[in-house]
Image (tube, rainbow, N blue to C red; front, side, top):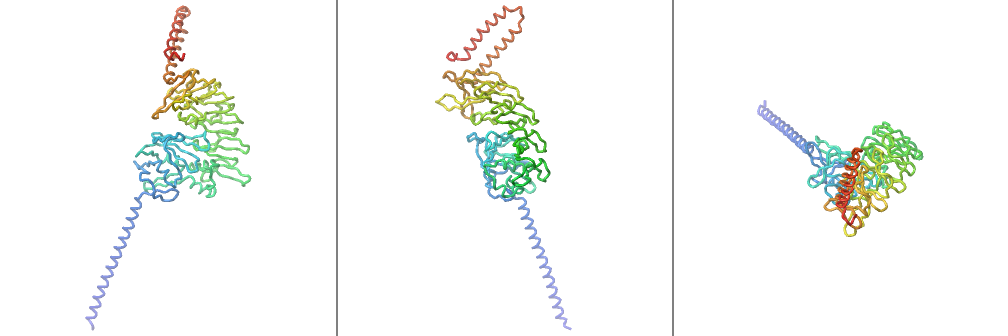
Length: 495
């Protein structure tokens, strides 16, 4: 027997087994290390912030584009507009104000369809429609606009509205995904439809925005004989496809519908007709008051969303051209001070309140004064004086001021009335016979004098018949007093 050879064989077998164990253990350790590395990489990646626009990861953007506080996200308006994939431009100051004011800004889409204005500490944002110069919309957002690092920030709610996008933030995944209205529209209508957008089809852009509110405008029929309606994104019918045209109105979440005989009405997002299609045109002039300007032929009026007539359709125009009075910062050209509706008929102006009551008769040549007659300083045309809630009126080339309730604040005797701006502060002046006076001081003195006169007249009327002689003396004394007040109020050369 070869015991020595057998022992060597067994010894070798032991070595081989030990080596196998070592190899297996080593492989197991390597696998464990690989798994640990993969898990570590996955963990690191899961903790790394991800920002996408229309499915594309963004790597180049401002470090403080997003600020996270207590589970909320604040977005730098100017930095989001600067991300090329967003397709927006940013400007300091309010839309159409032409001043570099860092307490306000607006963004405008690359097509120039719409501008959205944000103002520091305000939770109201304004959308102006570039190709509908008399229309604007306003929205209340969840928090006021903040100023951080000398830049304006808004919440996801404010950014979604201003940038017409769907924005999704996942705190767990540490990512923000933005989907533009154009990207969403392509998934519903196709690439070709969206690529046809141009300055001439603003209505298509408006209808795309309905997608952000869970709805879509649909077309049925042939290309030569088709009608449009509205469905939900799950294809539930909201408005039957029987209209010639439909346009989404974002601020009120309604649709302007046009029948085949070109009559216009309003249908809401529930499919309920709010205003029957009896008119040639409709514009929502205040979503909170639910007022709409309507026209029949070339005549205009005001109705409510329940079809109640506020102002009959008998006026040549309603509202003013706010662009003439830029310094007045008039947001709504149809309703002044949220209560006064200017109307024009036969080249004469008047004012109604929002309930249809006539405040000022339709007898004035002008609303506002557009020429100061002053050549040695910069002046601004003037329509309103907010500090006294005044409205400037003109008749026979003379000007005066009335309150928003129709009360005379200053008689129509002035050559002009205007404002100047210094360090952002408006100062108001009136011109009489070539001499300039402080408008607020003169208005206050005039109103005070009239209030004193009214008090005296009331007391006179309350006297008994037996005191006629005393009344005559009181009246005579009051006349003398009025002369004194008049002399004090207006310098001698003005009287």
